[in-house]
Length: 340
Image 1 (cartoon, rainbow, N blue to C red):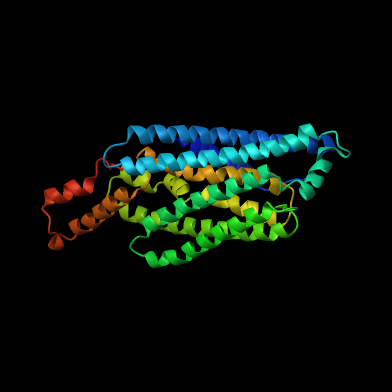
Image 2 (cartoon, rainbow, N blue to C red; image 1 turned 120 degrees about the vertical axis):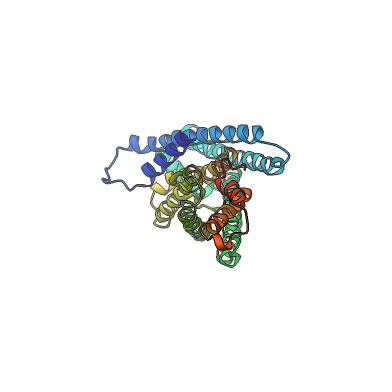
């Protein structure tokens, strides 16, 4: 689990960082760049496959009468995400085949065909299907993040109004962008469609920033409270660095900010980073599901039990207000194992 998370973080660090030196590359090298991006996207797809099968395995072996519904939901949710990523990846490969193999002999080479295709064929059904798959996966992933944010802030639901409204706006703009991209000359990187794309990405990434900040803030608050009440092992499991990075989807949010900056400026690097961001749309929620499946992620049950433990710990420090026997309080605070 730690290896896959570290690998994902390294991927974000390498591709989100700006290049220190911009070198003018030969035409042949420029033409080969998309193949390198495609190869790297295939590696990320393999990473998602690994995360998916690990998640399903742990969800199945951890299934009992209490967790059956939740685990079944996560299995179905993960499967849908994998199918959507497969569709998006297949669409990109299909379009890449048309550019780099089938029409490589056009005048001006693959790059000339790509420019022409951007005007005429970018709205082909497989490109629209790929866009729809990415948007749908993003809607599902953001929905999971919204639900988990509700879990952390269940006692202060009023703070969820703004993230919820931003989420609904991003869903509406995502649908609009998908429809617009399917129209003739509906290029996501040129023309009117760019305005819809920028609006959708801006709302989506704004939502990610809001939810990430809220979850990180809540986890840091819980870390401060838990450190003096619960065991170090339990505190580290639920509020450690790895927990904060995965639960808040912080790497995905930073990658989204970098992608939006390139997309708005219409830089060619946005094409490559867009493929990577589109893959992390699925990888990020899958990492959360894997942590839950392994018993290390936050669930409603774990949140309530830990909150109860912190309250009992506060009562123990004030004996005059403690209405439980010492044995009862100790048994509830120790939490030798938290079942999720």
